Image (cartoon, rainbow, N blue to C red; front, side, top):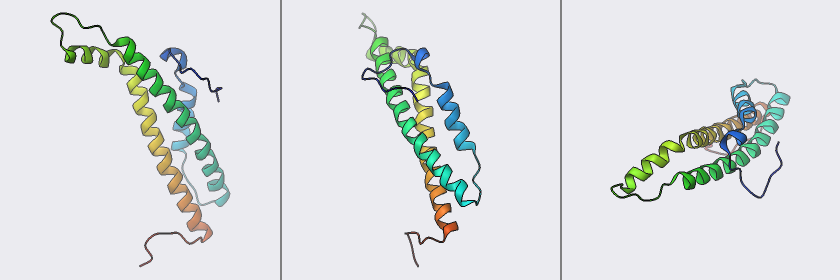
Length: 133
């Protein structure tokens, strides 16, 4: 895990967290089984990765904001605001793509954490909340 700095990253290529993204993907791809200890360890791993993803999302948002600000062209004669926005969107496509991937991973990780906790509760015979019919 990288140290947290007060200033956000400014270089997408220097920041790109390939190793951490691959770790998230590996964790999400890991199949669940019915062993309680495995589930307990997996819940802990998912919770840790949730914190890592939160930091990565904050960095990605900061980078996207910075890239958009840099890419926003000054108004030129004959150029509309839509033209400026289209150029900015094209220039920041990589930052936006990674941001969207991280958001998707964050949602998938949250769903897997909930499913893993539910499976563990069921296997341990814990009473779960919800409809009791």
